[in-house]
Image 1 (cartoon, rainbow, N blue to C red):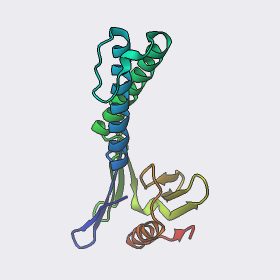
Image 2 (image 1 turned 45 degrees about the vertical axis):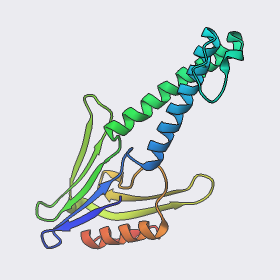
Image 3 (image 1 turned 30 degrees about the vertical axis):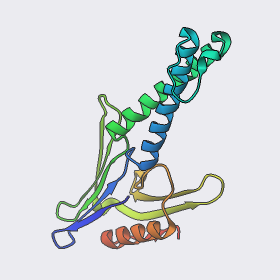
Amino acid sequence: MTASSVSTENRVLRKEVVGSRRLSNYWWATVILGGGLGFLLSSISSYSKVNLLPFSDPTQLIFVPQGLAMGFYGVMALLLATYLWLVILWDVGGGYNEFNRETGLLTIFRSGFPGKNRQIEVTHKLEDVQAIRVQIKEGLNPKRALYLRIKGKGEIPLTRVGQPMALTELETEGAELARFLGVPLEGL
């Protein structure tokens, strides 16, 4: 959760959730696209004996097996880059968490992949919220997340997927949400 807004005299709390449109995804999609193009152009240069790259001379490569291998890696990288750019374009995982005291409802909305279930929207009554749970797991694969515990429904994750949140940000978000909903904050 990143941006938050509270409106109509603290009656509605809305938290925007960053999806695939993160700086790191733009970086990796660009790097993989550039690398894939380089490998593919090296393969084509190796086959045609015409140098298509200004910074090296792949015409000296033997097409079988070096040029074929570079072509395979280039095609795979371009497919991966295409996937990453489409995920960024569709903003998979992006959405919001809205807690509305006026209607008595909470809404969790996320965008998914195109298709029948492109938009995922979960709605519950605010009175069914039991607690806000903070999960902190350190180590090689750290995880820091907020969960909403609902009566009879289990837990619903509220934070973004990917890089873990800073501890101070996690504590602040959890405390603000628990205070707004009037429920306990667990896990700290």
